Image (tube, rainbow, N blue to C red; front, side, top):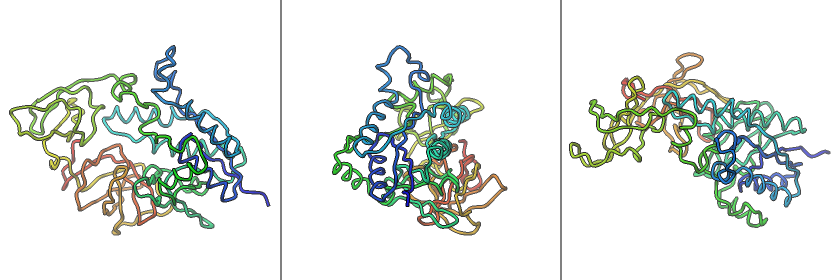
Length: 378
């Protein structure tokens, strides 16, 4: 009987490297695919200066590491460009959200449109029965459906970023390291003497890399400086552009040492887009940072749709502790999420991801945030 074929997203990192090992140990016919999603030279205006390529997005180095891993494990490695798809479905979304004054999560859209859509299509052309990724998540396949489960490693669980994939995509997916701890993953890589065993985890967004975030955005969005104001409307400083700030932000405001106010830290508590004002308040427990209700749209539920009147768990950002919530459907496209225990810095543009215990049900994109009926100015 022929082995089932799996095309693995081999990124050049330790997680996908060990995912390949696990798949081979489980008896699959494994091939790797390296995704090139960003053209650093073209899209970052650095043609003629190749020394900057590594600082922006070290894709070539990652490919070389992926190739070394594939060669050592004896598997074929395909290299494929998804640059245009990434631009159309991820980067354009990223920029459009910032134009609206929101804070997007491009990794969620990358999973939805690239890793579990375009990648899946290409893998099927290669005869794949399944695709696999090095995410810290688990999947349970039944005869007629599949469910997404949290990864065993609570600190690394990545189901938050998978909330927008659909049932058809999940049925074709495997997550080989979802039942492992990160330290166990590195131990396996060391046992196999892989080049990625001690490689630092990638952080941030690939197309920004190690570059300054403000400098990067300036290439695509013109800065519009304006006033920094208090909740009562007093001007206490200047901002570089609303797009550079997020709700709850403390660092980089440049407004410390004002003798007219208490000696407490300032935080971003809102944005006034109409007048281009950044609203700030003092104190980590500032009431304007908190909410107990939100409205979200772009609903996506992987298998089971949440029921009204039942208690679920939610995360409004990655690695956030679970928050008890109830849901109410406003229509087919919008959902109200109520959390009686107030949550801090819930931000439009981010995902509200719902769980029923270990199962990730899916999520939605946050549009508006409220405290006791009062809409927050973000």
